[in-house]
Image 1 (tube, rainbow, N blue to C red):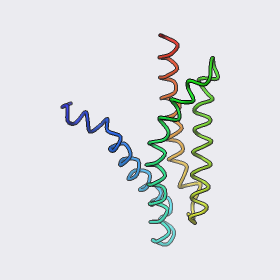
Image 2: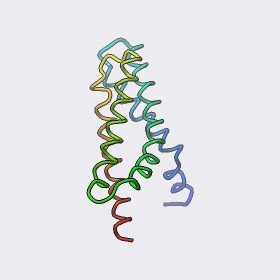
Image 3: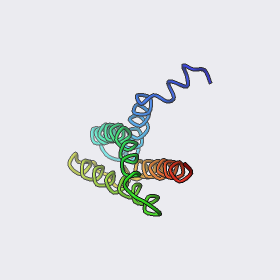
Image 4: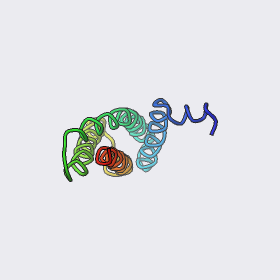
Length: 130
């Protein structure tokens, strides 16, 4: 991989843009059986939420992973991140009138919780092997 391509792949802007389009597109699809304005609004809301959560999640896991010891350090940070993401996504989609809230948030929650668990595990292993 060239240096420029590697820099692009590691860029926060790339990650945020990918989250916006991938999860916003998912929300548009999940709400496609409803009127186009509702589906588009759900897509924009989810895209913005995913972009923001992408920026916030890494920092949150890093902060929380330093706060717990032993086995709790493995499962508490991703659990807190998942619960926080769930509450945020459901509340904002409910306020914005998203018709298919559960369908809309299912994939973004699965992806963000998986990311949180894997990233937290990598931090845990790094700490326990130092």
